[in-house]
Amino acid sequence: MDYTEELFHHLQDGIIIMDGKRQIRKINKAAEKLMGWHVGDVVPFCSYCETRKLAAHEERCYLIANQGKVPYFESKMPRMGEYLINVEMSNALIYEADDGDKHYLLVMRDVTVKNQQEAARLSKKMLHHLTEAKEAEHKRLSQELHDGVGQSLYSVAIAMDNLSMAIDDEQLAAYIQEVRDEVGKAMEDVKFYSQSLRPKSLDQLGLLPTIETLVKSLRQKRVDLHITVVSNCYDRLSPVAEINLYRVVQEALHNIMKYAEATEVQIIFEKDRFGLQLIIQDNGIGFNVEEEKEGLGLLHMGERISQLKGKTVIQSVAGEGTKITAYIPKNELIREGD
Image 1 (cartoon, rainbow, N blue to C red):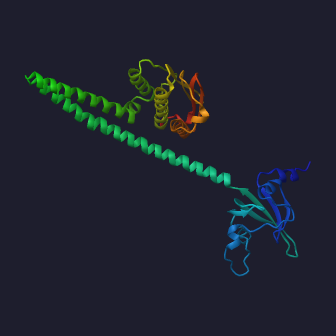
Image 2 (image 1 turned 180 degrees about the vertical axis):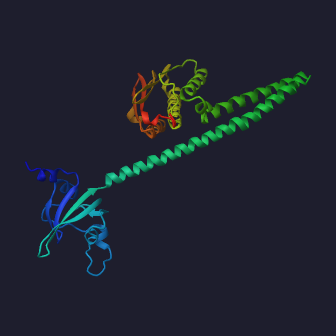
Image 3 (image 1 turned 30 degrees about the vertical axis):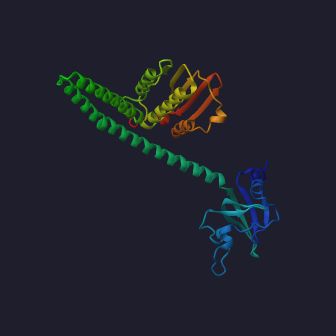
């Protein structure tokens, strides 16, 4: 069986055979669908060739004029009766008769999707760098709060304790104690904000201990909310995986406490030989995923998992709670040197 004809019509690229006058002698199905042309039509010049300046006796078609020097060329080509589309083209002389008649093979590919994919790739790369810069700034501010403001407040607290012990005036001592209590509250706030910006334990101890510290602090704020953490993964992960997974859990717990009216939350880290699955589920009031899919919190969680080349699935039923499932491939979890 001769597969040549079948192959010609089943290739994804548009293929055209045209003569020296650019009249189509043969065209495959992909080219007909892409450009709307048929056998007998004349292939128009692309937008670049249509207006480019020519040297004496130079062929107007850029690819033909540079035969063998330019392997492919991207330009806008007029689609039959409609509009210009971006195409990538290559051209080769496949037949030349003694009388000078020439046949050219023109291969065309729609690059609209390719350009969209490249734009999406660059957008993700930019987002990745912005996230890294943001986390670096959070780390710096957290350190400043802890080592700068926190230590200054601690010094003030010690001085006020010493001062209160040296004063016999009960009224003045009571006032100093009130101020000391306010300083203590400010110290707790600084500690909380420092932890929120960038927990030091994340760099020192890893993801799970930091998650457990976060959960412990939330239990103190919401004694009616039962949060459990289940994991078979206690190894250190790559820094980018640890911070992104921590932020996802942090964002999910924030949303649950603010909106879900839940009484139970379960956080599951399940590692296998292919990667890591994170599940966060609650028994709250749920929501309509289709209506809330553009919410910034959900969007940011998805973006963080996407940066790890992972996938996120959000399921929610009104009155039955919400389940967030994320899966990250193994290669994104490995720390350098492991």
